[in-house]
Length: 283
Image (cartoon, rainbow, N blue to C red; front, side):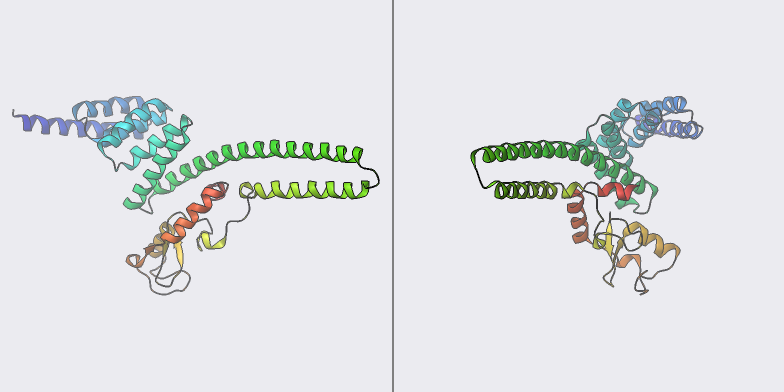
């Protein structure tokens, strides 16, 4: 048998092992599935999907160290592996590596949108990304809140000390001193209230929200009528309801949709400043 035939035989056997692994996985026999995928990897170690399949089994077992290990190998073999970047991101988040984990989820989301914008993976990745971004914001917000409160307390104590000092040194002007003191306290309160505005949940501006879902945009597209929608939701409408603009009722084909990069950038800027908005959309 020649080297080419041997290589082809190994590839065929590896694919059979993958199919066996898939069968075991569907029956929740994750240990047997791992063994089958390991056999496929041994035969053909350069096939990324074998690594991500095994990683998915490790994920089911909450063995995140092995998920990370297999997914790192998968994305080395295939830079466009959606599942590889996705599960690597999840594994990093489990280790509280928020920055790197979020980066991997964002990569998976971009790749997923390119491959299948209406697919279940895109929604699942977005939910995990939104959850991670919210947790990242929550940690930073808690720290900011503590620091601001500490600074506010220090400033108030300094004002109180100055007030008592002025009262003891000045005679006949107590009313004016008290009025000035109260005004300074009020101004101080306004300053710190302003400082916490970005971290206080409010309503997301309408222009940043899809007219169909009323949720903040993730992947906005604009129609020839000038109306923006969430890409996946609009494509679903065009496929299941009819090929027309939901707002203007004008005829509309998927090929006419153009990414609304301006709104997408505006949404990103808004979310960077108001991280609480991630939770409103991911609930």
